Image 1: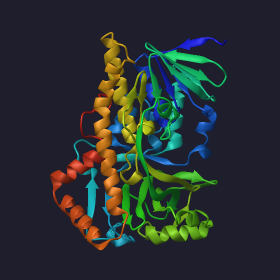
Image 2: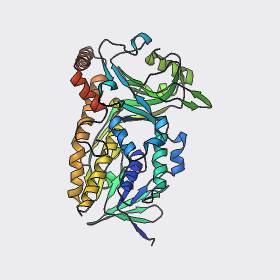
Image 3: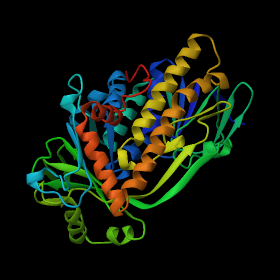
Image 4: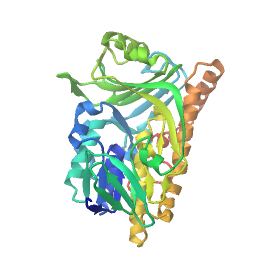
Length: 421
């Protein structure tokens, strides 16, 4: 029988949430085991994940305080403004507005000199996190390998790996995605439903600079977001002006768009994009994924805590998915560090319930709020269109209300963990 290795915490899932949690815990002198099915070098490869992440300004503070920011700062494009409109096509003269009713968020209205957020390629985040993990003496990486099962006992949990090794700790942290096997094995139930939509993601190069402006148009099939990126190379050619597109399309018609050749796919993009950024060309591969809602009914179990998509996976309409996970991580690390400082068991339900009380209501409020927005904006019914246009216009006309929405977009409302405050 192979030896059993002991740790303070075992993290199942080494993606952007699990990796960040491992680094944050190590900074608090916890010994961490991090398990993932992919090899670190494979996860660093550009072809592994061509998507981007919208990092809210309060979430960006976590990366700064964990000394990760400098590793990708040059690849993080600040979002200076956000323009949201219920419309079809944009034009240069209206800076993207296709409707007289719109929301305009300007970072200049916030305190300090922080932008509203940043757009960063996932590979840059993953590279920074894994480079830091490899420097850490307190994180042991088990990858590539699979978790076979977890046995939960009174004072500890034991994870058995595919190669027979056994890891034990007072706490297991599930960061293994929206379909979390760890969550299912522990019997934690989840509220879930699918949207009749598919998310299509692509990077484009464009003629004119985006000026740090993120755009979101609400179309009958769903939102179409244009997110500013830094310049970058693709297929041997450097593009100084790039944006990432997050195109929500009806599930029935999305496969036809994905099957188009590049020129026809670009034509479909231009029909939605408009011409306010000039000529547009593809600057990366296409990605797609089904859109669904997942919210765990409990974020904790005996010796188990859920973070990131294992706890909640939401529609990309508000760009808050990863920011929720970052807040989970910051809150959990603070909860565990405080418990250890008091001599308490970090895996006990009393400790973990403190984390749940901190995070579940906030997560549920944002998740259900986002779901309501999806249902309100993903249609073309005239009375609803009028109501939402008037609502956007009203919010835009009241500066204090507009500022609340900006702080929500910045993940800067509610009780903030120390890493985010």
